[in-house]
Image (cartoon, rainbow, N blue to C red; front, side, top):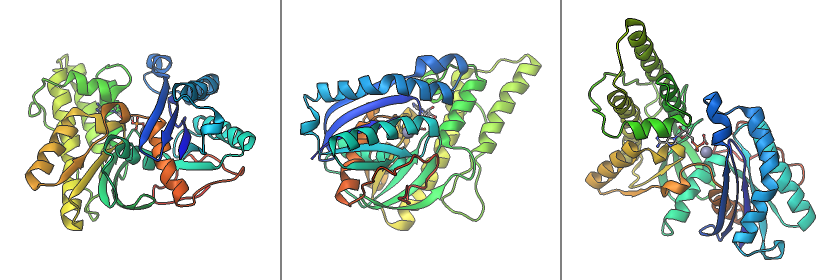
Length: 338
Ligand code: KG4
Ligand code: ZN
């Protein structure tokens, strides 16, 4: 089954053709990074407008690259939640138009489920059940993937997401957007023990996270240093900060895996590109003889190939929509509704 997939939840307009959830025939991404860089973050109105300008060309390119016409396509998958509502609506409305005119089934896909599904492309042998750490700009979850469409959240953040936490510190250090990626790059040779950061614990919920204290500590340290005329060693500061974030993410995931008996660990979401996180999990899983799965770097960020991968499994479970499909700014990964 060949699926034409569309993704427009944030600042990438993307389309892909994916076969049977695993084989990528094309994966086109029009990034808006250059448009948002001067604002230091994504401006929702600009994102929506740019999606409108790009989507038609991106979808045509995805079909051309895959050497397909609509006659070769069996379903239209689209990210419908969660994300920036104006941005999501562009993809959803475009996909609805395509489904209506072609008569093909319309398959709504949850953005975080698709981040996990990026691993089905990178690792053809991977099948549920497994435990996943899903870390993106807006979410930090530890999730049991019981089947391709059955999810159970076992831990989540009470405040900021890990990606947001990285982005805010990067911004306070005057690093360009996208912050997390640039913080990672500049910190490669830094000393992770040079600066002290709190390791926040959430009382009462074993696997949950809290990142706002860590973020505030970083911003305060930077501002205090500025007021005193002291300089910050950016690589050391970045390495120490990333290390503290990764301590939280890895510690809770390790605990959940032990308690719940998982030996298959899957990383997902934009922050899964972080070099420290990848190394830490590689070490943990090697020591525990657990199997570790991480998306290839090109599939960690937002893309439509992962939407096509999850779309195949949603379709197989009977999860299709009619023309009443709407976008949703927020929707829990374990829910399915539109
Ligand atoms: O999944 P994603 O592309 O978009 C959302 O669904 O939110 O994740 C974006 C997040 C941003 O916060 C970005 O700074 C972070 O992923 N990110 C990274 C790295 N690459 C992207 N954070 C840390 N290290 C990286 N190498
Ligand atoms: Zn994402």
